[in-house]
Length: 583
Image 1 (cartoon, rainbow, N blue to C red):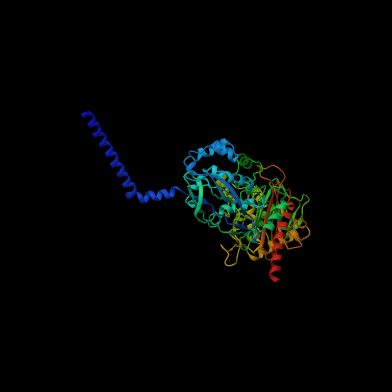
Image 2: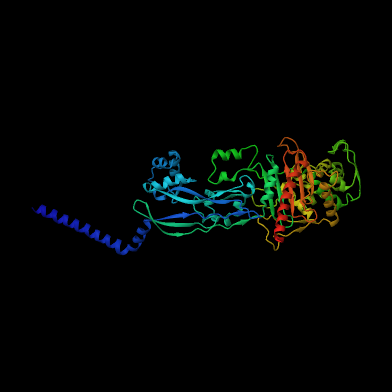
């Protein structure tokens, strides 16, 4: 009997102890931690959904939208359901491959952000998903904004494209305010002005029940749209130039030599930036990267070419400024020049006969410039070439830019451990040999000639709205008389009988001054010669300078019509704008 009483007493003590602990725990939860727990309880039935900010619109100088924002409906897996989600069930509901869904869930197992499962959902499918969404509380449908590039490949290398925030970017403080899964600029203008274009994301606060089903919207912090950008680009010029290129390979650069505005940039072949909007597949990416045509390469400043006869502009200036040749001196061209038993030929095998520097530029006589180069010397030629921006990067900031190469005696001694030979000077004087330039450099060079020897060092992507010109023009130490001689000759190239671009580059809309060039292709690219044309217009006070390189074009006359169409399109816009102001 006593044993039973002891058991009862022991049981009573244990019960009393548990009861005391229970009461103590209740007191702790309700009194000590009550405030915090109530707050946590409130938060547990609230879901915060990020709202991506619409990107700013990119316009050309005439107000044409180069990109658009379009609705994009997406299905996300909520973070609290990642570890318990059934990939087979979800895949069947969304019409996805179960292994793809399983992989996506596994890769985001520890994520605190919603996991994107499906995007670009058409309206009819969206209605079906919305109708059954209550059966799938682990999923959420969001209406995001996607990028659309209505011009496709046109100006793709300049405008660029967007892509999802990469792991590397996510660790960059510059992207600290960008939600995971959001899109940012990855190339071109989209990347260059990304901080302005992407805006500020918002968030939506939603009340859910114990099963995670949405009950009602509690509140919302609206996103702030990104800033719109107005480029200097003239899309009418761009379309005219790209249409003239057709399926040929090459590049065009058009700038305003007075303001530094980038008016047009073509690189062919190109790519469609719409392919990158929702993430490009590995197969598509490989096809672009390993394509023998290199569509991702921006030939405007990432490719280097021998400038051919367009470089005679520099050789002529160097010769005049050093006194190696005078304006009235005539040199006889018999079709070739003999230098120590080595024959250097002119493109006109029968020769040009006697000609002065004006006619030598107009008719592009090689023998004349062999002689000028031989007298002037490579170091003097290199000095004037560099004064006009050749052989150095422009700092355009859109990607890895090539510097080109302007050789001299010191360069060859340092790099090749060899002396410079006179025959190399002859070749360099007509833009061959070691000389390499980019189309962007050549556009700035010919623009500086057109503006009287005033060089604009900075490239401006945005439309010039008046006021001081950023960077301002840098005067080049070339006499006015030399500049005038070169300008007169470049006008003669497109307007005088015998001019190499008289038929291909002459315009009845606006007076054009220019220079053709034919350059032997570098050893890595076999085929016909490359075709060059550099020009500015109007001839008396240029507002546009253009360079065109047509790979394997054969002769400069093949490149001249492309530049002409671009210039005429731009001039037509200016004339139309002038008439509107008058009216």
